[in-house]
Image (cartoon, rainbow, N blue to C red):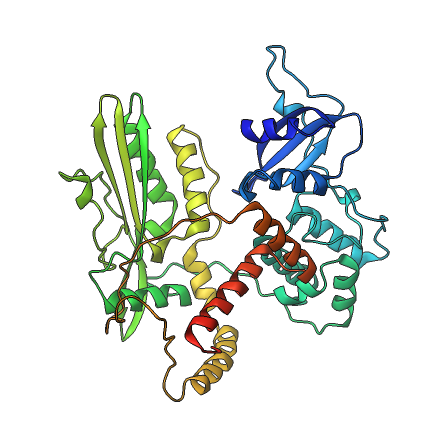
Length: 431
């Protein structure tokens, strides 16, 4: 962040600046630059200024112009006195005109973290900081509030409250079905995602391709007992870590049970990651290795069937609180409730339509993407390979962002499209 501040200070009109990472309270962090200038500066101009010399991830999402940088009595930046990022509204502000538009402003405010008076009905959701994940939350909130389904592609076509309100007025009702708590049972059905991973694991039981591995270096005095206790409380709190999977009457099911948890301390760190037996909980292992005086390596390995990228953020947050001795509020809903909800009759009927479509698509031979690789494709799918890292230059990055703005798409969508075109060019296939 110091480097970003240095680059901004090279701007001829900026006198003071501080860059901070802020938290929206939902495991999402973003960079925000607070600056002092004698003239009113446009945030898009500042983003373009930084993009000439910094990679995209170092360009702050928000720029807030203030009269002076607040300091504490000790001379440090008073973070608590800095305002939440205000969003510069482009063009004329138009207030909501009816109940639907007023409710949409309220929903946008909750999803984007922007005060309601700053949101006009002609503001663009994606220009106000929206992205695909926030778009998913938005359409879910709209469905819950109005009993109307708005698709993600539709949101890209109608990214304003004015457009959404008109669409909602003309749409057919689709009653929102909330997830209900399921009764205690011996075992529970699997969600579609769990079924997929269960089948993949059964096809190759010795694979570690679906292991989610993390390694952390811990420095200083370590309270091993406290660390182990925090992991035990984490397992008690989240049922997924006490879940095993097996076949019952020809169908895969999940059982939730009590488990014994202890740190694993194998002889060599290289032997820590091993295939999981899905029939034995917990599908989590933790290893602690001493790597030197006052230095340890904490290894965490869990199976993808009980965790994913979003839940990892929740687990880290909960673990940090538990290690600090804090009390966490009880969990109102568990994954088994979602799995049972997803298996309800309406969901199965909706899936039937998709099943019919895909069976028709693949009624002949399933197409294989014929890529000009260095070596022949193996008969059995393998996961060996390597990762190549590279950076795209500032000029190309600016051009990509300009295309995204013109197409009213996200940068991720543009990159995915380019990659798809690339695959089509080198394989001479449309699909």
